[in-house]
Each structure stands twice: as C-alpha cells, then as structure tokens.
Length: 390
Ligand SMILES: Cc1cc2nc3c(=O)[nH]c(=O)nc-3n(C[C@H](O)[C@H](O)[C@H](O)COP(=O)(O)OP(=O)(O)OC[C@H]3O[C@@H](n4cnc5c(N)ncnc54)[C@H](O)[C@@H]3O)c2cc1C
Image 1 (cartoon, protein in one colour):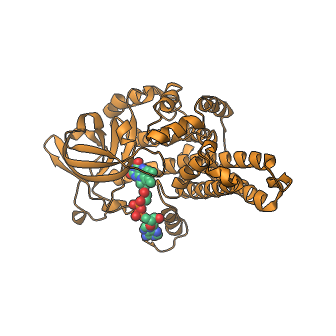
Image 2 (cartoon, rainbow, N blue to C red):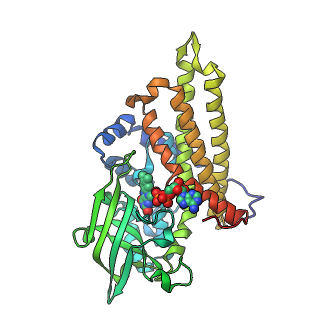
C-alpha cells in the first residue's frame, strides 16, 4: 500500500457498541475493589474471552475471529474509553502473534484453539531483566540445550500477569554474546508451560507497583523444559520479538487513545457542571484550553494510529507509523489526564471519581512496553537516518 494514497479503513462501530455494553458491567467500583486487594480482574477477562473479543486476531481456522489489527485496536480503545483497563489481558493479543507467525503447525494446532476458547491463558511475556533493562540484547537469562531439553537460568522483572497465565513467552540467550557476530543473534523464544514449571525451577513473586498490573518477578533456577518449547529457529528469537512489536505499539496506542477520550469526556462534562465564582469552571480559558488542546492531540494521534493499523493490515512496513502512534498517543493521554486531574481540583484525588486511578494507569504508556526515549531513538536513527544514539 502506498502510504501517501491510503484509506484509513473500517472503524467497526458495531464492535465499539458491543464492547462498550460489556464494559458497562464493570464500573469504577469494580476496579477500585480490585486495587484494594491487588486482585486480578478474572470476571472481566472471562467476559471478554467468552464474547470472543480476546481471540479477535486468532485466525478462524484455529477458533478465533480472524479480524484485522484495526478491529483489535478498536476493542482495546473502547475498553479504556469506558473506564476499564485491558492491561490484564491485552498481551494475549500480541504475544499470540509470535506463535502464529513463527510457531510450527503442530504448536499452533496445540495451543491456538485453546487460547481462543479461553481454556488456556497466554498472558505472560518475559523480556525485561533487572540488570539490563531497555538494552534487551544484553539480557542474561540463559537457555542451554541438554539433549531433548533446554535448561534455563536467570531472572525477569516486571513480567505482568505471570501468576494469572498458563503460558509464558520467554526471550532467553541460547548462544553467548561473545560467540555471535551481532548481539541481536543467539537469542531464542520459548513457550513455557507455567503450570508444569512452577515449583520445578520456576518461581514467580508478585511485585507491588503504582498500578494494579499484576506485575511479577520471575526466577529460573535450572528449569528444564522440553526442546519442542522452542518457537521457530534457535538464535532467531530477537527478530521474532521485533516482528511483533509493531502490532504491540499500535494496540498500546489504542489503549492510550481510549484513556485520552475517557479523560476528555469526564473533564468536559465536569467543567460544564461545576460552578465556582458563580460560573462553570469550563468557562475559564485556563481550564478549557488544556482540555481543548488534549482533544486536538488525541485526534491527531488517532489518525496516526489508524494509518499505522491500515499499513499493518495491508502487510506494508509500518515501523515508523507504529512507533509514532505509540509516542503521540501516550503523550496525548498523559496531557488529557493532567488536564482532567487539574479540572477536577481536590475531587480528582477522591478515589470514588476514578480520575486518580486512570491518571496513574495512563502514565505507564510513557514507560512501558517501551519508553518514550527509545521510540525517539528509533525515529532519529531509522526514520531520519541520524547516528545511533545508544
Ligand atoms: C507496570 C509494568 C508492566 C510491565 N510489563 C512487562 C512485561 O509484561 N514484560 C516485560 O518484559 N516487561 C514489562 N515491563 C517492563 C518495561 O517494558 C520496562 O520497564 C521498560 O521497557 C523500560 O525499561 P527499564 O524499566 O529497565 O528502564 P531502563 O532501561 O533502566 O531506562 C530507564 C530510563 O532511562 C532511559 N534511557 C535508558 N537508556 C537510554 C538511552 N540510551 N537514551 C535515552 N534514554 C535512555 C529510558 O528511556 C527510561 O526512561 C513492565 C513495566 C511496568 C512498569
């Protein structure tokens, strides 16, 4: 597809309507209660799975809906616009892509139908490590071949949902970094069966965090996994992970856009109703303009996200657009969150209004799954041809 002559494509108003209806059953009170106990939104994820939305991207031949990425983006955007949070389950949508694109037919037949039906949860993605952070190719977790097995040692951090997932997609080094030409080589992807591994070399500890994202630390201590847990070819794993990143960026941008719309809707309504000094606070330009600006930023980011999804769905390169969509949407949602928080005054801090919860939640997009600086570095180097900065 020629990116200068493209159409933005379908916007799935029917999907928006059904997802919004489902989300109405999970109001702010539901999410606040979960935060009180750091619990996982099992009922919400169950409802999304039962409705088929979580299997949107799984091809029909494996029991999914076989929808394009734009449809999945609409699902996630609507969840966030409705005041809910897809962080409990969104990874399933993009992790599954690695299995779909690079897994063997046997692996796909074994796992995808059960993932689509919800009997198997693929929610955990182990990449980030405590000592190497954004410098992914330096990660230290090792997987060494031993006959029909691999033996894994190392540690991951911030692995979301590992305690609520049956499977984990793991990136580990299979060839030492000093034995490869490029440090992006020698990394491999494995599909770990958490149920079989826990207590046999795999330990998962919850990590207390600012938002209820069910984050964990994961420890591998001589964990033996069958060799057929390897996805694709040994040593090619970094390429497979990169392959899935455009989809991830576009879906995360959709969530940020949903949050931005939530904040704009809430703050617009509130500032029309809240009377101080004898007039609605929204009549003051200092209150109105940050909301109006956030709206303009959200609309612009939304166009970029739709462009990225249209390119992705046409099978055309979309790295620049996917990264820019994620960057712009994360900034738009944060600016909308700030405008909303400020407009609500002291009430923005009252938990029952949900503004502070959404404000904390949307801050994540500037840090994870990739931080703003790393996106800027990508644009500088790969789009503008400037020297690599890291
Ligand atoms: C709630 C939550 C959930 C997460 N879930 C997952 C998950 O499920 N799986 C997973 O693998 N990871 C997960 N992560 C990890 C997340 O992807 C990382 O936190 C993120 O990629 C940043 O890495 P880091 O925290 O190690 O920061 P660092 O790499 O230590 O960077 C710290 C800061 O320095 C900046 N920086 C570093 N180097 C440079 C440079 N060369 N130039 C400019 N700036 C630089 C970064 O942009 C960042 O702002 C999660 C994180 C959080 C907070």
